[in-house]
Image (cartoon, rainbow, N blue to C red; front, side, top):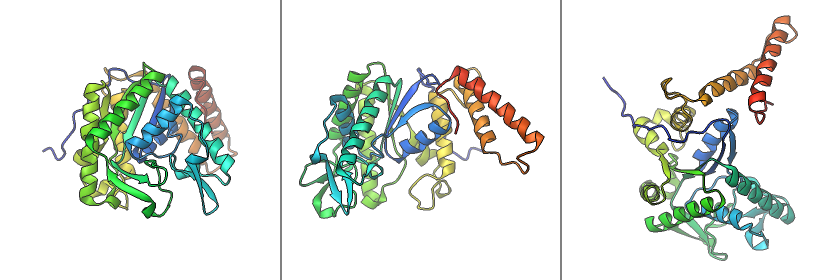
Length: 323
């Protein structure tokens, strides 16, 4: 008896490993996968500008990085003693104007360097709803609790999303012609926009992404479909009933590695990354171990063996460090 529908997944023709550099941009799901890549010690840069929910926000930061945009006062504002930017997430907020501009310049440089060096770039789209700031005309990345009357809310048409994603591919390939670009749609439900509105939004994103996959020869990872079709039960949601639970994130993470890193597959298709990941996970677990007797001979021997494993791993992958 089969009690679950399964989405057929094909392994990537160009999988990544620990020698590759990755970039992840976009919504909360990019953060979820990015955190796991970081914990697993893959070389990854995740959302230098913070979480970006819609295509135009992602396109803006890509364009700025490509053009070495000079950020001025028109891109930032002060609210209740805190300096913010409509093109970035609130985690970049600063207490002074100069610090805010410096932060934007710093993350722009970080993103450009990462894009030029990356072998794989993953872009996760969260919503097709955008808020346009009336005064500046910016389709903001974050409203930063500015009164809603200062914005015009609108749903991006499929054609406009397709055009934006196409421009994103052009920008990336200008900086790095060899990078493999993969799009995905976040499984997070944006119900503040409304139930029907959320469905329309996801439909617009999915339609546009698949058009771009054909015309631009990019790839698609079905994170949204894995959540909706393989994990279609509220037990796979967090307490807010909107975000995937940790168990769901772990499940989609395993599918992600199965496709793009040859992990969790049959031995004939597995890659070197599988062995390295297993060693990294073992070391991470060892580092979090809390002994009853820290000064015992047994624990000192355990730490010595753990240190030898770390040194051996770092000889092959010098970028890997453990706190």
